[in-house]
Image (cartoon, rainbow, N blue to C red):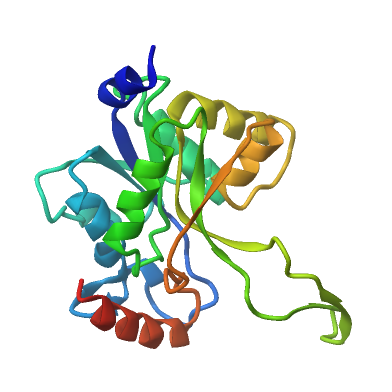
Length: 239
C-alpha cells in the first residue's frame, strides 16, 4: 500500500480516558466534571475532537460507578461509545481499544486525549494528524522544556540540577496505529510494567515514537489552581 492509499483508507478514532478520581483536588466530583468556562472540563477536552471531521468516533472511558460520564451527550452527531475504565490509565485505554474491536482496522489511527486537558488548540490537533498520518507507528504532542530542572530528595532537598537539553514535556493527544498500540499495552501489562502514557508503552515495544511540537498551554488540570489558569487560556484561545 502506498502512502497516499494509506491516508485515504485508514480511519481515525479518539479514546478519552476519563475514569480518574482526581485525588489531588478536594472536590466532591472528579475533576473532569468540574465547571470550566460555562461547561465541564470534559466538554472542553472533547470539543476539538468532536470538531475534527477526520475522527470517525469517540470512545469515552469512565469508571464503572461513574454517575456523570454515562449521561454525557456529545456536542455533535459524531459516534460515541462509552466504555468502563480500569485500575490504571493503561487499563482504561486498553478497555477503550477493546471497545473498538470490530470497528477499527489494524492500521487505523487512535488518538488518545486526557479528559483533564481542556486547553487543546484545534490547530495542534490538526498538526498532529497531518504530521503523523503517514508515519509507521505514530507519536505525540510535546513541548520543549525551557525551565531549569532540579532533582530532589524525598525531603525536598536539591540533589542535582538536571540538564534540560533534549527534554520535552509529554502532552496529549497521542496518536498511534490501533493494532500496534493494542499490542504494546498488552505487552507492558503482561510484563508488569507501569506506564503513564501510551508513548511509553510504544517505546518499550521497540517503536520509534515521533515528537510533534505543541502549544505549552495545553495544560492538564490536576489541582484547583489549574482551573483558573485554564479559564484564562480558553479565553485567550477563543474556543
